[in-house]
Length: 271
Image (tube, rainbow, N blue to C red):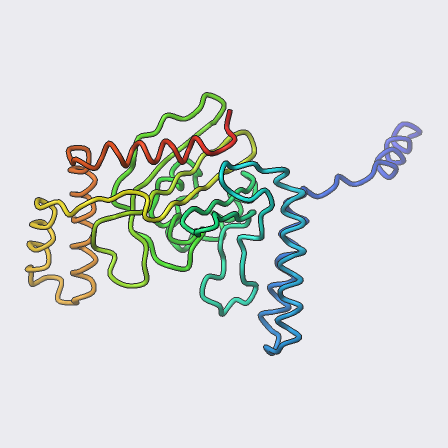
């Protein structure tokens, strides 16, 4: 009996385990989302919103730690750029965002815990739930960093530094309209220990249409089924990008695309 009482005292005297730092951040973020999504928009609310984003960026800096990416600023802002649920771009990947002066190169750095949480939040968007699969999926690049849609055209083989646990590079096209055309954006993601690095470069490489894939596109669009024009175009786009991925290694621009992807990976602090 005395032993049981002693054990109870020890349990009561032991402080509760602190919540994971990421959970503290997510709790703060979600409280702000609830606040601003219900608020009537006004100049004062916009000021409070900007202050909230700055506060979240400060918390993220504590989570992520110092970041040094060649050619990018040392201090990042929050990649979550809106806390209004109704805004276009709501739900970007939680992390610190960096951008070059010309805006062509952008990066996001986050933690593996925040990445896993974000993947769960975007399960219904078709984003794979395993991080290794997610960083190769077009849906990840669609939702994580930009407001514009993204079409993946090909994976690019990169050599990851030994300390990194995973790395992937994709070639694609981003925009708010037609996503069929010569892809020019290269996105690279690498995971090292508990950090995730995501770097994007637009106008990264000059590519060209592939005649064999153009033929596939025309054949698919000439079909009478499905009758719904949008569904038929989606199927044609899927066949077209699959053809592009297959044919890309034989194209004259492919070596330059792979080299550019490797150079992006080499900008990250992975060694």
